[in-house]
Image 1 (cartoon, rainbow, N blue to C red):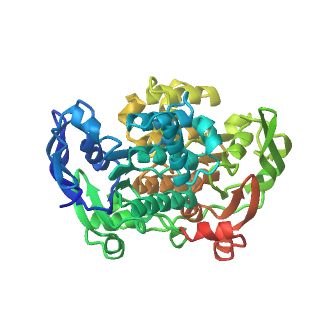
Image 2: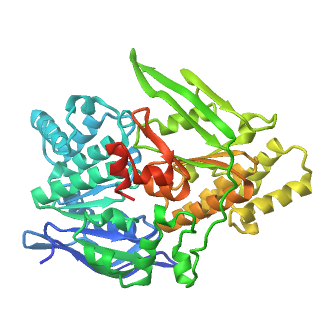
Image 3: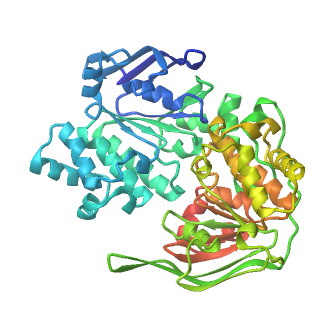
Length: 531
């Protein structure tokens, strides 16, 4: 009998069915991945296993867990039974560890709390906590135990989450997008760690992702979900190499790579409408004139009497109309550079020279698009009012009618409807919110756009839409774009020039084609392998 058997699972609100009769099973020591874009029902299906769904949703069907021959129906079980299963039989790893971890408690205290719930006390709990940290390869145990979540890197926080999940020695681990915001090398480390631990200890994993490529080598089987239904399932290799369903093929085709550079990325919508969007972009106008020139940038931070050097002798330039990719893992210094460019922070040493050929202030020439559009937008202000405020500030010469015309033009440019102007950020999807952030940046009429991981949290199809949009806008508006990303695939498709950053140093830089084909550092070569 399988470890977990989900039969005819249906999840609905009063007015809408979100998951339609989904059935699947997970065997002993098996890794099964559910793949699909946002809204496909992946996370809802997983949350229903421990009845973690919001009270506004109703789940029907059957979810049976086999505990050494003893079957338990979980979907309609009492809260007491589900509490007995949580941690000890089934553990959950959430997408964003910084949100899932308590920011005002040390990581050690949070691990110990899980162990107390599992029956460990005193010295035994402390010994077990250190054993778990060793298991997830966090070797500086004392430092991690005393650290607060914000003091650790993204990869370290995710390892802490895995350690907490393993506290009760569960039979099944549900991992909901645990590597989405991580760079590809760190993603490989975390996936490899989960696979190693589960195979060594005979555990099963239900893994949720929107990236088929990411779970390819990690999974035994893959389930593809679309609009609340499983449209295709099979062995991982078979799904990747010979997909049968159009939607699965579309998911694989959405991902950017260097071979597609100069051509529009295809989206799920293109496949649904049987459209061929693989048209070429008109090449941006090339210029030898520099719009930004950074020379020997240093940035140091002091904490507890210690000096941390975030940037060390970093030099680069961005030319007019050029797209430059700044690539590196978490903590490499990418976002520090963006903060220095927009004067959110001052450099400890070195210079940054701008040449915008106008007398406008920096904020009118440089705009930034952030990773999380929901955090970047004021939830209480309508889109129209938000854009109007920016236009009044940066284009004070426009009258009322001209401002309204400008708002209409901006919404059209970023692919939104004119009636969207009266809505609030919460009325939009993640991809639409990112379009609003782009419209707000364009309202300033900048010369340089800094995209700081602005597509890393999006589904591949939505990412393709936003990347196509940014490329269109770059050509139409003559923008220079600095694309900060941990994805070599995104940078190689979008950018004509790449800069690879690690530990605060530029380890190599050059034209995209040359750098990809003739990478000199092992680190860059490892990133290129993941394209």
